[in-house]
Length: 351
Ligand code: NAD
Ligand code: UFG
Image 1: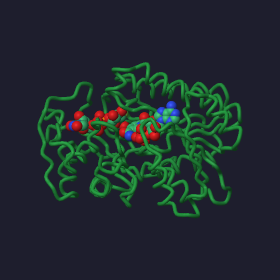
Image 2: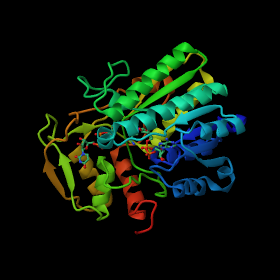
Image 3: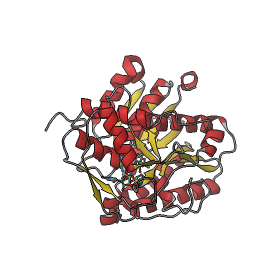
């Protein structure tokens, strides 16, 4: 689709985990891409690897700019020099625990950065936006699967930034119907590109399950703490909807397609999940199989604020975006292990 028109897309946070995988798919689909990232939680090496995976020709269509969304001047510079047809907005902080300890850091970065972005987009007449929301806006859902029209709630400052930013998007669009905004609520993104050249590389000790399992598998951490073994689930551990990051990346292309082809979009939310729930212990078993090694586990108390079971209703995305996840947990673990075994220290060589 992109190649006919050479549309240029601004991708904020494009050096990060989901961003790199999406940028690669955008380039392969013929889009021109500008990434803006302050490298707060990423490294430029990740963008360099995207260039290599895209190949010499397509990588000419990628521009990387170091910039911070909190600085309006960084955005002014980008928009005054280049015409963007749409923005995919990944840039943000995402560590739940850190957001509880440092709420101001989260409100400043996620809220102020996004408000600046809307202001400058509006000023330059770029009114098409795909926003990274999260299943966190369902809080601890009373019913599963989570359907897009459920009541929303936040459980922590990070979740509040996503909830506020969804509300802000709805208000901006209501006030100016020229805006078209798609809110994508990701469930639990895992896995890596099949090449094993790009993947998730969290700084410090990982908060999330799969990067933690990966660190145990490569010998950087001794064992996995399984938080909760007395949940009313099939094996007592909590259930989530894990989604392959390549499926997620393709979900963004589907959202862009909708922005460019449908007239009446308004501001609309879609779940990006598989619709299937997998327990923590099932995920450990699947990873052990993929890696061919044992992951030592310690059964621990529940983690404060965790929900028992969360998974997506996928009907709306399937019907309106014509998008459906292709991969299951076997492929997610295979590709995550491929990335981990090739890059046991992430984008760094061994420190
Ligand atoms: P990530 O940390 O790997 O990527 C985010 C990128 O944004 C990083 O490269 C970081 O340096 C950059 N960034 C942060 N603040 C910035 C700022 N002010 N200016 C410029 N760049 C900035 O995270 P990710 O997993 O790729 O997540 C992308 C988005 O998806 C985030 O908004 C996150 O909240 C959301 N999300 C992620 C998950 C998940 O589990 N990974 C789940 C749901 C939603
Ligand atoms: N878990 C462990 N041990 C760990 C890490 C996690 O047992 O070391 C368990 C958790 O208790 C939970 C499950 O694995 O039951 C998944 O935990 P994650 O931290 O990987 O993911 P969450 O579902 O808790 O939350 C993440 C983000 C949220 C986001 C949500 C959906 O942290 O902000 O995914 O996108 F909303």
